[in-house]
Image 1 (cartoon, helix red, strand yellow):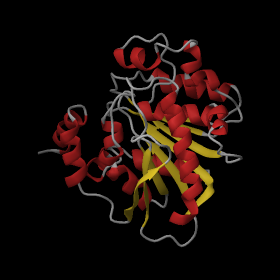
Image 2 (cartoon, helix red, strand yellow):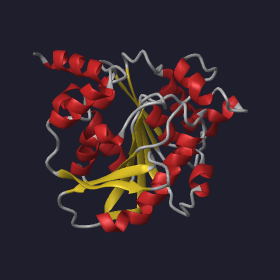
Image 3 (cartoon, one colour):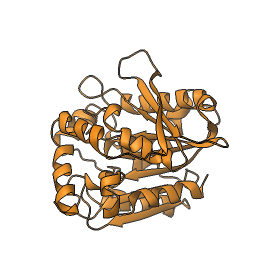
Image 4 (cartoon, one colour):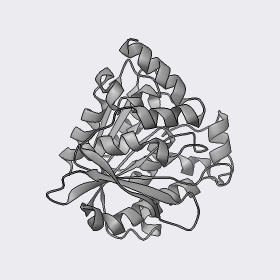
Length: 284
């Protein structure tokens, strides 16, 4: 099967039931230079308030700390299905936390963002135990996870409320994220945000500011799930206020392929991992 055929096959798996993605997570080749360090670290009392930590197999000095949020429309997903992402970034020199977070319909906006902030607080608290520098925090995410990452990077109130303290997010990367999607016109956004008393307050673009962490906003040119303008609009809004935002378009990738490109089997399709790592390390 050609590389394009493989990508199409696994893209279909990613958007179907969890079991095919579990098979991909289990059997796809992973980066040997990264390893799973710790599982199911609690950052709250609820079953989904757990995170896993990955690290480079060799850490000669405190490594930068990356928290990655997976996607799933705010109503699905599991950290256990993204070990290939944790090991990919760990192999590039990051200590990586991949948290679960509570999902719709059991919770709605802003609970999943608050969970993200609490996960960052916990990760920072245990960072030194796993070879990481707690003062060099980076965020990344895909789709709904990119939304969480950008809200945390732009609206400082969430991290302050979680007691993170004076830590400053050094940089954040979003892959195919929704950042400017009001009015809500699909079930995922209606279910997650429809009860918000101020719908505009749910939008990351509202919090664009010049003194925020530098942003890397990537999108696939063939994405039909989240419009490319979400990334371009947020990048423009941040830059208009004097902030740093880099927009990258991968013309041949769709909504799922952009995160699949982080994995070893599909890394040759587009340099997504290289570009994200380059951007984050430039601010480390």
